[in-house]
Length: 331
Image (cartoon, rainbow, N blue to C red; front, side, top):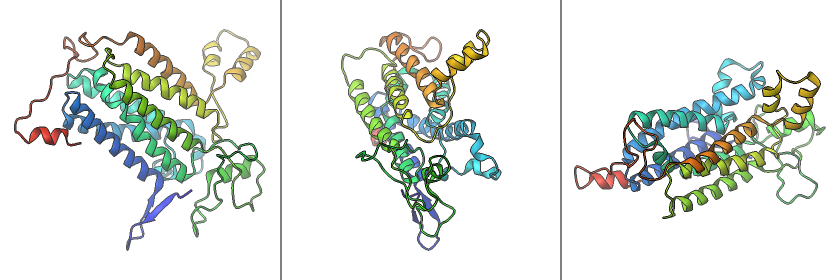
């Protein structure tokens, strides 16, 4: 655990691990997406512009979703604590949904075939997010459940990860002292699953599968790459949430739907049997959406989601000068 990577020489400004790796991930994903979109016949500069727009939307959406899901953690905190993202506190799904909506609107306004355009971005999304999970691990957030004794992948987080900074404590250590009977004099948390690293590995595997699938000559449907992203990440995130130790409450969507039709006792039983975390509920919804999209995605050459009356086929960018092509494709 290393929540502060280093301090700027002579200035003493701390560089926090979580926002540092999150921003590196955003930049890597944008540059790779721009390069990939240029190869697909789109304008790389447009991809850069839309990528930066998606980053802003993703940051806002991720933080807003975190506040909605964990608003009780801000009780007694000053108002500006909502913006202190270096302390952790971004929900991937909130950022993903916000960035997707913004990209959809922007692509529609520019007359781009949305599904095909999203396919060029899809493999780069898990690559970018994987950097954020490294930041999570170094920050100590998003920790896992306690592991069985002797579990080979278990990690322990220190009580005081930054020497001389009593204001920075391991979230896992604090949680175990409050809820798991850990002695306040212990220097380490209980051994836990490194769920941040589990997800990091899953994200890289998903990115590899998406790149392989998008390169297949037999793929004939626009939107199937992004559909596969929704399915694969939905499955991976749902499974990893089962091992997360930072969620103590959940929501039952079936109970919410059936509440007007069943008795209180029946609703209680349904809620107990089907309670899921917020991210698991979103995983189920996106998994279903991805499965449906994969099946009904339009074939190449047929009208896709874009501006009214336009073909799905992108218009290759014709550089106005000999150097323009190199500038568009250098990413």
